Length: 109
View 1 (tube, rainbow, N blue to C red):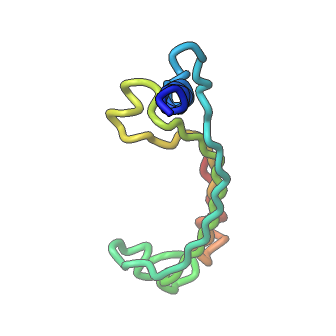
View 2 (cartoon, rainbow, N blue to C red):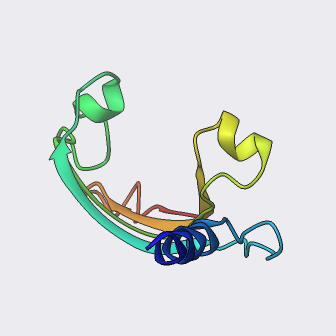
């Protein structure tokens, strides 16, 4: 009975021993693709927005679409831990202010 108990305890100790010390941990980057659409009202803060433009009408609405490719690391380095695992990447945004004559269709990257 004692031998069986010793064998079981030995097996438990062998299987629960951490093996990550001898293995190199891979730095995995988590990728994501983000697409956003927004539409809303424009607050009239300047004369141009209030209607002093070629159309003679106030700008009241906008629409925007953005597409982003992002990466995130789960905190392998100190700077990632300090900034709480930030996302980084690139993106492009397309906007429409319903005044193509003067504003056009702004694009940002």
